[in-house]
Length: 60
Length: 352
Image 1 (spheres, rainbow over the protein chains, first blue to last red):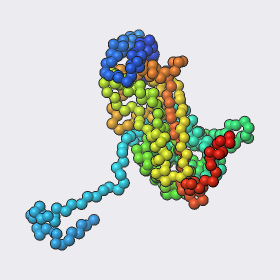
Image 2: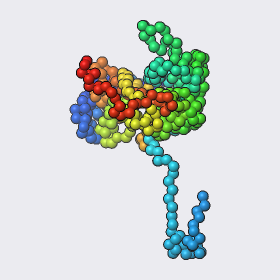
Image 3: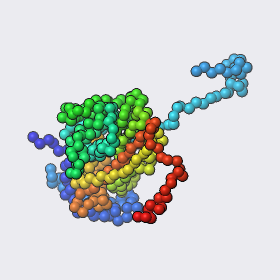
Image 4: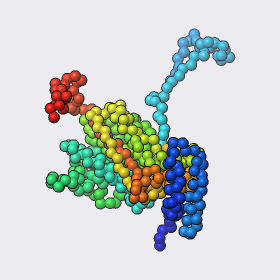
């Protein structure tokens, strides 16, 4: 029997399905990484998180 | 200790204690040695190593870095034409140095004949480590039966060496000194357990190790949570190590740096391997508990954008500081006196 996957592995798998949104979020941060403050890229992050949540739901 | 006050100053009775000026004498005393600045939680470190060793398969898979560095440390022995009767491996992890020593043909150069394993230079090796499970993890593998006489010793404390002074002909240490709180103290102890004119050869993580993870986690936490907490240890710099060795009394120092860059598919693989190495975060004052999912998600995106390779893999830098120091001995070569040079270096360089 296959050993049960650790939650972090399932997490990693779902995250790997959202490379496009991750790149958008990453670019938003890296564009000006000397002045990062809380919720600087909140909009981009919520898009990325929505994508991850959808991927996590689909994977189950 | 009894405090002998002069008779005249002794208050006649207790009630006049506050009134008499003589009775207000106080004295201060200082604990020996300076205060040790604590950075790491050694119990957490011990727990992490025990946990890592509890899964031998995963832990062996993640040994690539320690095996590689142990090999490079042992390679430095090729140049020392000497036999070492008794050698200490301090912070042995899973005896990676013993494994590297027993490797066949350690100097793979087609122009030279096949050389015997480096273990032939050593009669007995003492592997000292605080985590018993990690130390005995590979106790039944074939390298234990090689001609190397290997003894394992579990240390109760990483920072106190329970050995007689001047009892070892060499001390080796690979990838464990970076978890020591009192590095000057431990180096001084290493110097004291060495016999005169014996070498200490060590390697530790330092400087910009894991700077990619450090920066991207900082950015992710800053943006998601509005503040940062330490996730990657503060590490000694190359410049510090020379001074530390000199302060501990070592002579003829050699310090050099080597970067090993490992590529990972994603940040989760990197963090899982670090955990399996027993190299998790053990900084005092870190935030307890696991990283939140939001931060992990943001970290993955930022790491990839900021440091990622073109082929989609993520590089992680391990900066290894190699150090060699010799304990002072009678017939040891010493640097000549300042100003005693006879040849001008400028002439030689210009002739070229």
